[in-house]
Length: 350
Figure 1: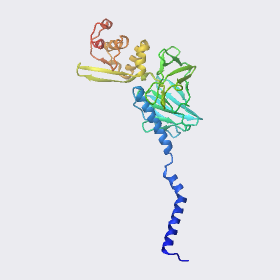
Figure 2 (figure 1 turned 90 degrees about the vertical axis):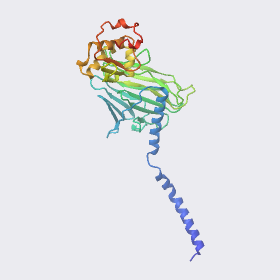
Figure 3 (figure 1 turned 30 degrees about the vertical axis):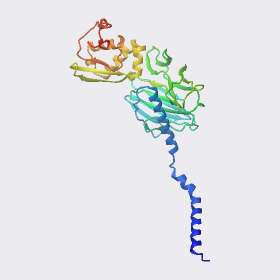
Figure 4 (figure 1 turned 60 degrees about the horizontal axis):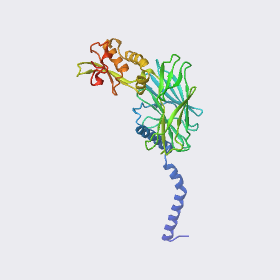
């Protein structure tokens, strides 16, 4: 039977509609690249973390970008330190190696067992996402060698307690200090590492009550987000130092044209600032030895040692760098300058 042109056109249109209905679902499915949902979650978690850091005013945010190994672990290197994030049988760990003179420890992370393997976000944050949407985790390696273990509480159903199990050498013990931080000490009481005081902040930048509880080698961060008026996500963070060279962010020699002499400038890390205030006697020796290890010993004069003692023991802890001038005269009785020099920050610069 031969159809009129009008009928033939109608039949062709109908056939096209039927064909489109049959293939459309497959075409739509193919139009969404596989893994986009996971990548979006990865990047949104990293964004939430960095917004929380900015709101909390937690200082340095310069990251060391890690790389992913063939085994699926994520690894980063800073000076002689190594950070390796692994996940095995549902347990995620940060394996920290401080190199010569540093600690070797493993920090089990409170990541959900169902979380996929660690992934690296565009900014360098290692992320473990929760398929259930309650608690995500990020790990950042910073340029001073320390790491941040950042917990992202996405809603009010997230737990209050987050356990970090430490695997340490037999002679190292976590000790909670009066300011809420945790010192990792050897049997002689020497501080070998440090965990900064706990903090947590909500999506509006409001602080959320939090603290540590220590039970043996388990450090729990308690985040009291329930029962409060908080905006989610809430970001919480232990920051871990695990090698004595992390007392300083950096130290370098340069020419000071104003004084006409060489100067060694030192920027203390958060751990260094803490030891300066709470453990000055040990820091006096450990910090000085660290400087002499990094720089040629013969460059250190008697006056530089006196300037160092003045900065550490004299209570003249400038907010910026410590500056030790190579050719300043020796002043063994520098303590007599305390309270007599104006402005006070010049006490250690004679």
